[in-house]
Length: 324
Ligand code: NDP
Ligand code: GDR
Image (tube, rainbow, N blue to C red):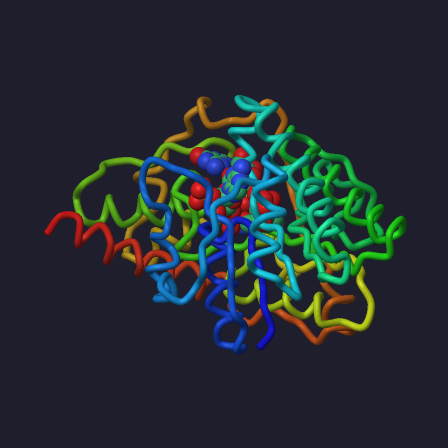
């Protein structure tokens, strides 16, 4: 039986990846950091909380990773742990660099110490393109990070490549564009919108306050994207791959579609609040996923309309249950 080890297992992608790998017959381990309340809500939502093995650890504590890897004895490690909210990275730049940047070095060093034959996946991001120099970004597009988060991710990205070139590790990086789901954190704009739509529809909120409505992103479904991570670690050679839908949509248009799902006009409810604007935003991102399609036979299967409908429906149910 193949064994996988996931940092960030309690996050959106960690939950979907756990379910995917369990269905493939893997034994799945993950690090769970100490918190004052349980963090297994997403794993429970997908019905896999009792099937994964959670080990105490934190990516900023290398010893904890070494012990966890010695226990799990994995064939594959997926490094998904991060302070992943771009907006918070200006408020907590040092913590973001430590977790999102140095955290990756800690995982790679633990792999070298415990078993250098372990295959490694790094959760890199389209945010590294930032103020992109090309309208559609591929693996060859130059990077221009625009936030402490993106800088930390770029550091981790190059560290991954460096460990491959220096020590021959099977180390891959997926440059994933935004991917969402009903398990997305409430602070991210997509989920903030679908939650807001549900609250307004059910009469528990009157308006939705957002920042930059002109920002454009290439949004896909998280359930599709975790498969790409697994394909990378099963490939013949380690590499970097852009994973995206190839379509870009503005926050404004996302609002229009989401409100339309419940028969409302977004213009009647959305207010722009400068509080949610960023010191330096990324205006537009759109990925060219040709390489992952040709080499690993991956492509997105969920359309944006389907994704938004799925998220609105889940939030209507959740907000409805809260009120009951
Ligand atoms: P989430 O924010 O949902 O999950 C982050 C995970 O990291 C959580 O499990 C969190 O644990 C964990 N974590 C945070 N700090 C630490 C720490 N110090 N030690 C151990 N674990 C920690 O992110 P996503 O699931 O959306 O994303 C997964 C990864 O992919 C992240 O690295 C993100 O930056 C990256 N990424 C995401 C994209 C997206 O669109 N979703 C696109 C490209 C890259 P806890 O539950 O305790 O908070
Ligand atoms: P992003 O996602 O920064 O792309 O990072 P987010 O949903 O936070 O922002 C997307 C765009 O929407 C604009 N925006 C708002 N954003 C938030 N959060 N709240 C608002 O009210 C709001 N109004 C407008 C933002 O300015 C931005 O332009 C996500 C994370 O998952 C990262 O970890 C990951 O690496 C990237 O996606 C790819």
